[in-house]
Image (cartoon, rainbow, N blue to C red; front, top):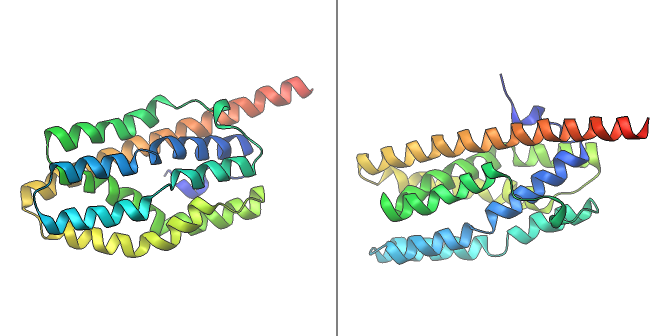
Length: 198
């Protein structure tokens, strides 16, 4: 069975691409939340989303800083098609389903960070010698965020909860496919480098 913990976190190419792809989708977090706010009428929800925007402020820069710790440049890692599929679908859902459907995407990412973010942080530190600011911050902060997200979702009508659940499932599928693709690409690149060196 596939496990994120079993990915090649010690592989510098995989790690660099992971930080780059993280940068690409995280830089849309505030924009997605702002779009939600523009479509909401409930003052309590608007306040909550504004607070969330403040919490996510410039977090893409953490991923970029982690990439630089490896001595790599973002220009060397173009945005993967699965990365754009990951966040672009959220704009559609906000506009054409319901703004709160974004909670499925948020819930998946924050639950993942809360569950394994710090494990991956320690794995990267011991394997590649890099202290990931992005993973540390999200591994620590998203524990409380998940609780708040679940409380919000549980108060919503069942039909909306179902759309959120579908979005969480779709987000998980795309994200795991992205990680698998990056692992394959990193292994292939490493193999090509080894052949050149030989």
